[in-house]
Length: 288
Ligand code: NAP
Image (cartoon, rainbow, N blue to C red):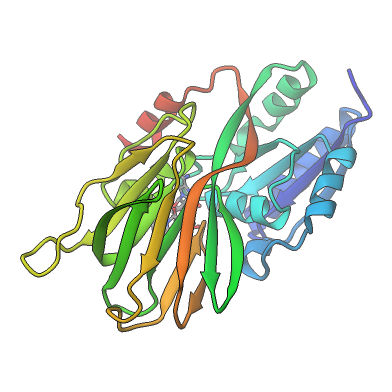
């Protein structure tokens, strides 16, 4: 057994999560591991607290980040640590727990499997958005999705291009661009397809598209390969409200947006899975 491995336990701040995190920390220590804990669900209060350098340094110190909470806590941890190379595993104390691999009554199994290398690493793609506004371009990364919409309840009018070719002017609530991992989240509620995370693609899903004689919009989701990006130029004159972007539950608003380019990112997130993990079995157990 390799006793030099450092484990970082990141937990939501609910009583149950904190208890589970303490128990797990104790069990890891009894098995000879060095453990550090972070009991704040930082998602609620702050964004990307780790710089890219600090994030890179994490992989020198830790070999596993255990995230105790639900999917929301896991997404928060991924952003808080700024998409580190260190693999994650989730213990589900939340509601759905699609990312989370184990339940709190399986802590011994987690340690046993980790000790004996009985696991695989699932690689998850992310989506990258370059957002140009007020003369600057900012970059955002989402593990589930990236969304463009109106801050208030107004419709948005967006000129959509694929690989530099104009496709349509979209009118409706907005556009969601999901990763395969995010296909089971908001994308699924919008009627988007479930996508096996082994596929490398982005899914462009319309949010309440208008399709009338006044406005024509594509009404079904589109799948794009890794080498094709989606271009969005908002018709700022035609939209009444402030524009909003959202990614993994975080968001920002703008008076106007000039241009947005969205593509599959090179940044990946790795999740430790037990050998019994099967994406479609998980879909069946959580959704059907
Ligand atoms: P949240 O309350 O943290 O999450 C909303 C629900 O989505 C929770 O039940 C969460 O699971 C689940 N979830 C998150 N990622 C998932 C995934 N990849 N597959 C399946 N379920 C997933 O909401 P939030 O903080 O506003 O945003 C976090 C995510 O929630 C967003 O990235 C978005 O995809 C999703 N969301 C969905 C809707 C919708 O379906 N109408 C609306 C807004 C946001 P846990 O219970 O385990 O946390």
